[in-house]
Amino acid sequence: MIRPSLEEKKKFLTWFIQNYQLKRRESLWILNYLLNHELLLKNVHFVENIALTNRGMGLSSVDSDQEPFVYYKEGKRLDDPEQAFHDLRLNWKEDFYLELYFDGAYQTLSSYGILEKNPNETEETAFTKETKKSVEESLVRLGWQQRKSHLLTLIDQSLTDKDEEKFNKYTEELKAIDEKNMI
Figure 1: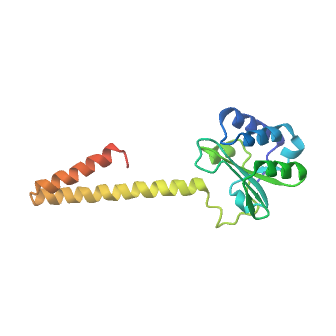
Figure 2: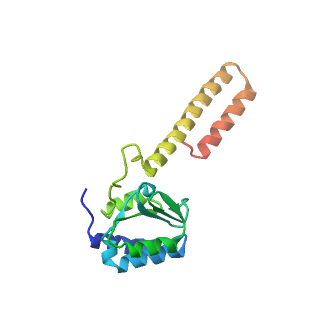
């Protein structure tokens, strides 16, 4: 994987700051600091699964369900942005990993060409959040499709049995599924 250039990182950060609001104001300060300190930004790597890194920070936009701020250092999990910022400034020559939590993060980071492979990630941990979300949505859709198929069978059976009560019950449930666009 090709390392992104400093200009690509700056272009992305500028876009991100202009388009997303972060849950903690300290997160914005950190991003602005990175944007204005090229020597530091050069060693910043945008990755997924920062918990696997020895020095990594996660920042959340307001539309994300992730926690607002998290910092990992040598296996310890911290939530103090000032401590993370201080460590970032003191160790500016060392690699630092950043994960941003916002809607469409994987696709956006990829399209800007700045998403890098996490060096501590194994094949087992490479199952990304986007993939997990996609699988979960597919399973929900599959469940509703199976329920709909089963309801159609039950409706046919109630017609065969001339059971108006069951017919009404199953058709109402089928209508509710279709109205919610569950499938």
